[in-house]
Image (cartoon, rainbow, N blue to C red; front, side, top):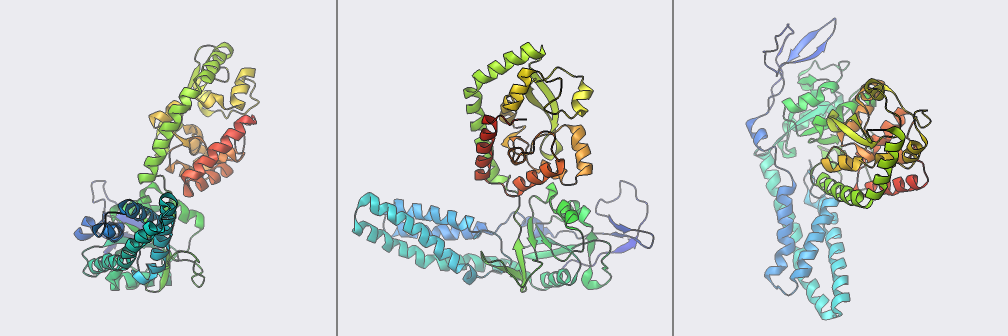
Length: 488
């Protein structure tokens, strides 16, 4: 178990001192330094392990077992296995759970398996037109049905045993310091079957942490990202912290928390959610928070889609781009392509490409002047390509280079990013994902001289609810905006 922190008076320290020393709270009455939790070697070694690494092979073994009895229906058996695993995945049956119980998962397991089996049986009946064939297929599927439960039970037993023996454990930070947070910390210390090694509390200075049960206090919400890195934390549990929601959101949206599991104790615990299998730690309900999914395999799919879309669009739209280049050259003179520095993912600057739609301005003015649709420097042709968004087409090359994506928050200039990030705290959170050629804010009417706070809210909503279908919807709505001439 993690020991209580060593409390020592704060002193002026040189940069060469140990980076594990953290200044927590400092005011007129107290000034303390905490030597925080140090991850165990076992926790460090088992960090890459995830729940699906045992459950998935066990499920596949049960689902593919009928092939060892008969190879006659091997295509249908494999199809059922793949559909079932996919259904299990979208149903959350491969996510980490704190309370392990096969009986909790039983209804979801068989409902999704039977749905996949029925779908394949219907297709087989239509294709073969034989009741005997379908009957034989269903008899083999019954073998999988009989094996699913023991296979899942065996994988869960292995995980539970590894947790109780502390062969596998993950570091956990509790955000909060009220009665619920303190009780959660006690449960994690006492019961290893939850698979979490308590690293410490993150809380506001107004909450007292002066008893043994309320320690170690390792930092404030603003330090959460750094503390996750220092403690090699895998799980963050949000409990009863007494701070404004905006402050908490800024802390948990930090890029450094992208690879952690976020759990929350519902405020109204007497009213559990109506969907999915409930989870708990010592009868205290906890729910996983949905995280932005623009990472991992889903990001690979999005990136592949971007490359295909941009390549095809460059080929199909090349005549329009040629006309736009000629028009820009005639109206604005040399320098058909306009390059301007913008801020991309994680605050990385890049040069965005556009067709020039107004007479050249000096560099300082172009970086710090907010342009609007009726700017007198915009000529007739410039207004046309801005209204139809044709001036944005060179950004397809930015997409191919990886600077941008097709759908995402629109990029902005460094001067305005700094300014807006100060005025609107949620604005900087837009840069958790790649910037886009079009975005949800733009197709929702937030273009040109519109409130920045509204744009940031729509952009963050897109990030936190991203799906490929949402991208498709934004692209279709963008096409509608272009045809109606509402580009600017």
